[in-house]
Length: 363
Ligand SMILES: C[S@@+](CC[C@H](N)C(=O)[O-])C[C@H]1O[C@@H](n2cnc3c(N)ncnc32)[C@H](O)[C@@H]1O
Image (cartoon, rainbow, N blue to C red):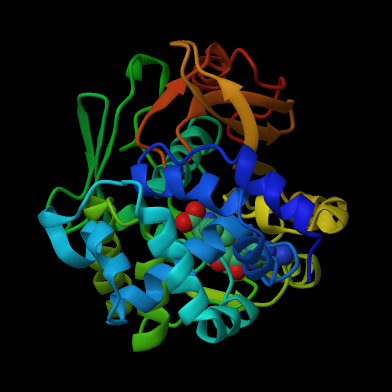
């Protein structure tokens, strides 16, 4: 069990909950209540207790737990949901007290596995960036892929800025607000894909009703569009699931890397994953990711907890690109990829200015 003061600090300082007015308010409720902090402290080591506790409560409400707290959840009662008021905090406390055994069990067994389909744009962007430097087929790896929904980025429709890309017939439509899409590569110019593989600690099984329910519960109560996107992507992926290796990337990563055809370029992506790796394991996690670059040129894109201010002034997280030319932040984005602001470093990759000489076309 975790130290209560550390958990309280996590709730006090949490960022990125902009799209959930309910959770934004509940963060303060939890941060100031000993019993709720004690419950949240049951979250598994390394996992973020904010997402885990809110997910566990949401899971029980969506599964039909009969409680007045549900009246505040648009995902349960729809448009008639009540806005946060002076009774919401007490209702949340009462619910957590009444269901503490179930919540403890969920926190002890489940992981924060929010598979946010909107983040598939990172993978697609990586493919388009690699196409700028190679005509060779590419191996795609997502570390911490959850149910693998983003590994099917080639099956989805995208509107990025005002431009449309991808499969316009797809039931999954991803819209990303981009103020200067001219800095991005053409997201329809992709290399051939030689192999696609995901790695996850415990990949959810989208054929399993309870795993699907957990993925749904991790979507915040107000985000009905995200819930619909999740549902549509689960259908697409269930029809043709990508290869996903279960296990800790620290052990499994180098083994998977050794199976990729030597010399072929590889795109390695992780989004909202490293933040859930215990701090003391992060150097080993980084080394496992780097192992993918040992036997072939690698582009590594990461969207994690690197808090940055976008050129427009809004707070977001940095999208980092690492390749033979080094590591740099190429965009600042909303953690859920509702928006993305490319930086000049992205344009340097597109135009070739940031590239190490002699790598074009070598694969
Ligand atoms: C918040 S989810 C993000 C899923 C996906 N990347 C996305 O953006 O939609 C984080 C995922 O990383 C996985 N994960 C965390 N630590 C891991 C590790 N050491 N090795 C492999 N997977 C890990 C978790 O199981 C979880 O499914």
